[in-house]
Image (tube, rainbow, N blue to C red; front, side, top):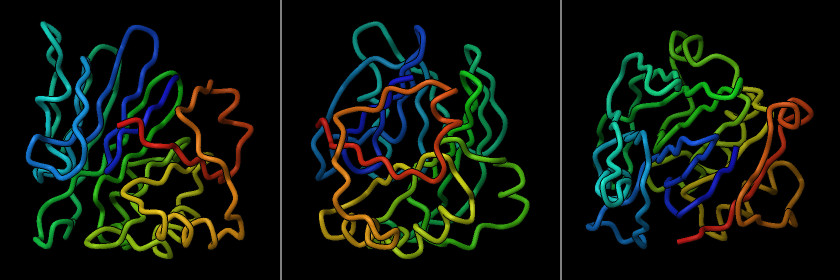
Length: 208
């Protein structure tokens, strides 16, 4: 599996011949746009920073778009979406948290989650995360402190922060007592390597 970050909460996840896009930024976002062809596109909430499905397709390759709660099976990828709340962008709206199972790994994508108080039934449905994508930028999403505490609660093997600035990233790393972790251009990892991790924070540098 190869995970690449494009700023905000926009990620590309590649495995075998399948490409997933999470929260691509739209043309109306202040973040830089990146376009690539994906097979499945996950949208957490309909804000310009997170709902640019037009940037998740390229040429004749158009993704199957998932933007709401429910259970999905597409091209061997199993996903579940759960409703939560975000205040990203200064407006209270629905935020979908996703659990995505592929290559024997459970990826939990929190989107622009605002509150660390996730309902028990949602936590149960999400299952145990191998890789957790967590917002740490404040401003309507989790603060660095809230994000770190939630990461500990969920007991993910690998934690990947998003929606971060230099300041909030430093605060988030400081919660663990580590502030000199080098950012990676992308994360390439297999299931057996994930199993050897325990709460490791992986910083991905934006490729946008």
